[in-house]
Length: 182
Image 1 (cartoon, rainbow, N blue to C red):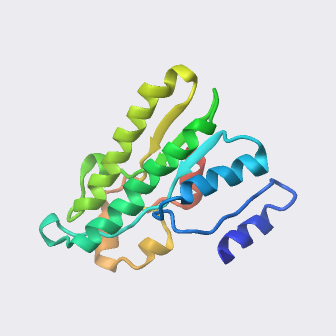
Image 2 (tube, helix red, strand yellow):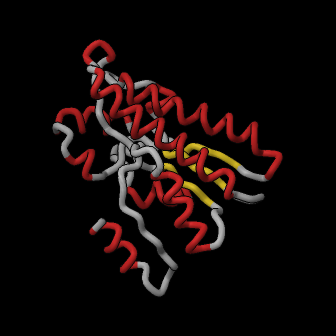
């Protein structure tokens, strides 16, 4: 909640902001967020599904607790947010799922992470087929590694291995991904 309040404060005078801190995997949270958006702004034009779990493990080493966590955060939550948002959206509205390049390429020991990121592509394609005629679009932004708190804990040898495979030779910045989403 503190980070959201800091963000809202930094945007004061630039944009109207409403915050709601919660667990994206909790049933009912998506409906609360949509209700807050409608109450604050009168409508909902854009949904960005950006929450995710960065847990990696080979398929044969993934326990059920990890499986459930990654599916709940990275697949069920985006699905629930789409389901809640769509009735509030009109022509010109957009849904953006933040996936990963690993959803199409797979990743060494990526297992369930790669599977749910591929699932976001399928979700966006389904929404586009179902709602494109109503003027609602759905897309996926699929970056590789991003310099965030989540990737800061990667072992140095892992970081170097992945950086060597990136044409730019570095991880992307959050600002670069935000520009793609925008």
